[in-house]
Image (tube, rainbow, N blue to C red; front, side, top):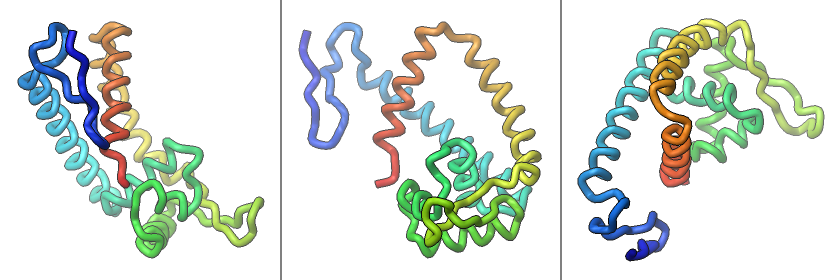
Length: 165
């Protein structure tokens, strides 16, 4: 069996004729499917943001705050998203004006600001995304545990490659 070769800073390149290894056509189909899903997600999130008086970037920052406990400061949002701190400050101003977050002094460092989610303001979004989660769960039930493990491994790897630098 021919080993795949790692390219500098990129994924392994694998010879297409190796049995059991994805070939160019299958990889292209996966890429198209993932790109289609990304388009649907971006456009869907843009619609949700607009319906709730937010910008899509504001909504994604809220997603980060909801999904990740380690994201509670403006600096951390800047580090993860790659946005300048001045842009993050304006984003937080909009989220605070919309009632989605509250700024609070960091008990561990009084010079720093922590962001607190306003649970009541998030309820309509959580209801909407809860329905989407139910749909995703229904689709996921159509796959075996082993298949889902492969999907998780693939999406985790893609997330690393596509993370903001």
